[in-house]
Image (cartoon, rainbow, N blue to C red; front, side, top):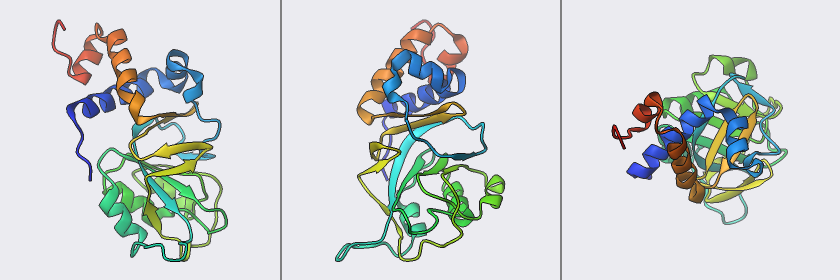
Amino acid sequence: MQHESDSDDRSERVLRWAVAELGIAGIADGFGRELVLDQAPATMSPPEAAIAGRVVLMRRSRPTAGQPTAASSFDTLTAAVRPGSIVLVATEPGIGATFGSNIALHVACLRAQALIADGPARDVSRMAHVPLVCGWSGSDARRPSGAVMQEVAAAEVFGRTWATGDWYLADADGALQIPAAQADEIAGALIDAHRDEAEFASLVGLAKGR
């Protein structure tokens, strides 16, 4: 599990503030529409959720010959998820549901911020009762037999190449990707633009008068 630097911690607070106060539309206006995803989960629960966090990247697919596999998706998630992260899952088509309410509840207990997948979910009627923001596309009652979640360094999700450590931001207007290398730059620009606002300065830990 990675430990955040002070810069990472400040960037997280700034970007969470931005998605709550400016929204995806405001961030896109300020930093470029190319950040906005053309694809996003068809369903979000709750639908009005606003989230911003570093991704922990997973792939749910059938293993190839000779590929090591984890004992279970629960073991993989327990080892990889950190508090405040967003679990982003690339799903092989046709394997069944990417996740159900039990996986979602487990991710919630690991104190992640959200569980987002480009594939279908099961137990969808129960998702509203899970204390976690969840996103998925479609439903499939089948368990993903033989397709355990694996942590990966990079994967294609929602038409973009993602790496663990990139940032996923979303609200009711849509979602965007901030590559890890750009997060501090964008957070710094937001600090410069809003440092005179007392509530913002207090939230992100700016020294008084700085």
